[in-house]
Length: 137
Image: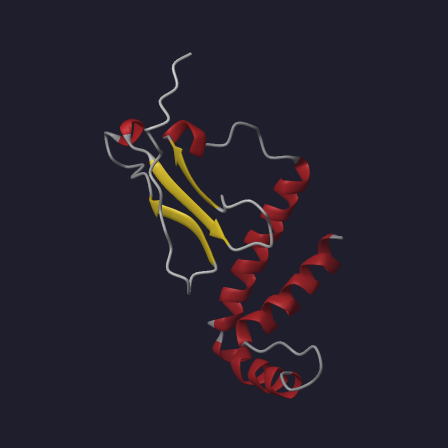
């Protein structure tokens, strides 16, 4: 095996103000006819109390590694079904003028209490999620 110690891999140095970097630097355009030839570049960086100096990573992923390789489990399907139902119910309730005044009054009454929801959407999500669980649980 040939080793060339004069060759180093590319290195990214982050400004000291960045303690954490995580995410895609570019994504694959799945609608493009050249999607199979594109690569997604993911980068991570973290400051951690470690003796290692290697706290940065860069990953390349092709289109096939972005797709899921297994079928969703029954539990995942249940969670997805609940999310879709509650999301639809929240959006319907937000746009229903007959419920807006009562929902706003109830939201304002609870928002300053301990454990109260701070946004109208999160409050309605809590109500609709509880109603879904009672109806289907």
